[in-house]
Image (cartoon, rainbow, N blue to C red; front, side, top):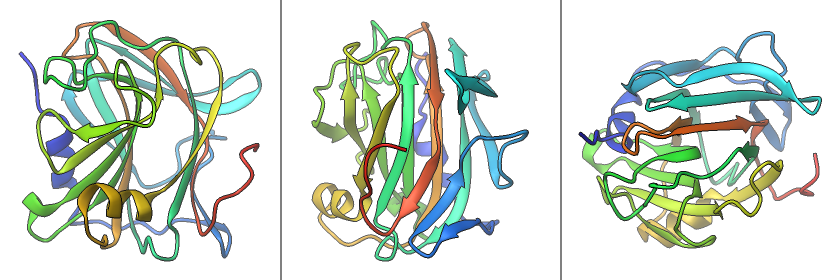
Amino acid sequence: MTKRKSVPILFLLFTIIFQISTESADQIVIDDFTGPELAPGWSVESFAGMTEYTLTRDNDIPCLKAVSRRAASGLVYRINIDPQLYPVISWSWKIDRVLAKGDARTKAGDDYAARLYVIFPSVLFWRTKVLNYVWANQLPRGAAMPNAFTGNAMMVAVESGNGKAGQWVHEQRNILEDYQKYFGSSPGKVGAIAIMTDTDNTGEEAAACYGPIRLQSTLKPTSD
């Protein structure tokens, strides 16, 4: 049985707000995963079993490793940030492989080795919008489409396929421009950032690593 995953995350955004640290006026660090524990503010949201999230190092790079075996749980970090001030999100990730049965067009294929959510909450929860940046299985790199469960979440294929599997890839997205492009209006505050590696619908296994996640006032050089 498929289970709606993009929508339940939308219901998490109306209570606790955590203060996050800053490196400088033009950058907010959500987490650099240097440990020994996750930064305060992360919470677990489970949809079907538990994806394993472990702080580790990969090729001497601090990261959060995710392993999913027919499971789907994510980590959610609640914030309250104006995307006009911090319009860019940057992160690094690495996957072992994409999912053979993964397909953004179907509910049964709504699984990804790695995904990162930027969530824009609304007092009326059904108006909450989500940019869901994914390492796509079949959706071509650069393509986007509504989530199979809800049109309020846009699936944006930042990477696709196995061409870069096994490699660290650094990403930057202008969330202000993406929101305007895909939802046709200007966004409110960013209420949460979330990450998830999930395989509950396809019944497969997946592993990924997530590197530092930051909100920035401008695009920066792609090398950390």
